[in-house]
Image 1 (cartoon, helix red, strand yellow):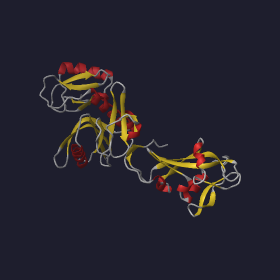
Image 2 (spheres, helix red, strand yellow):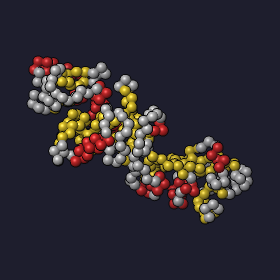
Image 3 (cartoon, rainbow, N blue to C red):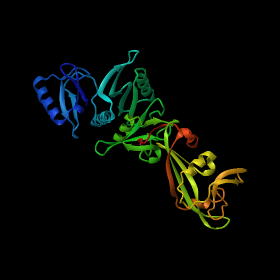
Image 4 (cartoon, rainbow, N blue to C red):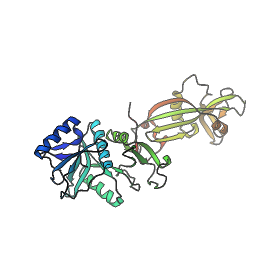
Length: 353
């Protein structure tokens, strides 16, 4: 189901660029002149509308073109990719043919351009070997095009060289993009969230991709969010109730890491302390001798007697409900990248402020 045809002058006409009135006018003119052609084989065009209202062009019956027909699912996903690219300010076309510097021909379902950047969106509904996928991706790379793959089948390779997601759902209930967590996809329990790093409507994913928020791993210039939680416990020395910082979680897009005070370097702990509201009923965070470590470290203290409070002695704190006491933005380049560590894999990052 192509979304593009050629006028008598050889100019591209895109079905998605026409409103219902323009579509009706073009259909009326074409019924008289029969001057529209398919870009793949110059066959006469039949203008159609799918059961879900999607406008598209089709080959005239009994033509000789060998191009495989597309499903309505394929058409719908192409339309969503076109819409996302246009909304993000990219120029876009469909069923675009090209050639690599070595003469290899390719055809992109959707080709979007923005300055020097070119992205081909490939909707792969049928099975395809890893070798064929990488061969086609390399052909795009040599042509100066970045390939973005939407796979209906699991088993695609996970690497920085292959931006790809799994497509779940159907045309009736809507499609969903699922981003794998790890280097392999489990063919069983595809609906188990544990198998996926992120899940979102396909339109949201495509929007993120064309806004350049679909990124691989973690880079030092990325923004992050730190969430500090406290828990209530009873001091083992004076038995008084007190609150202590129990977790510091840093989140970068789809990645997160949860630590305790003793997991962090003192300079990072001080940055956390500076962000705490002054009215929280916390004991002082200051240097204390931590026997299991054999040295002084910035640590929690009892609000009543100032005795050391930490996970080595106060595991009971994990039984109480956590309380979020601070949430603040940071830059990984400001010492926080070591906290979250290095991460691999693709993920969608949130929109900036």
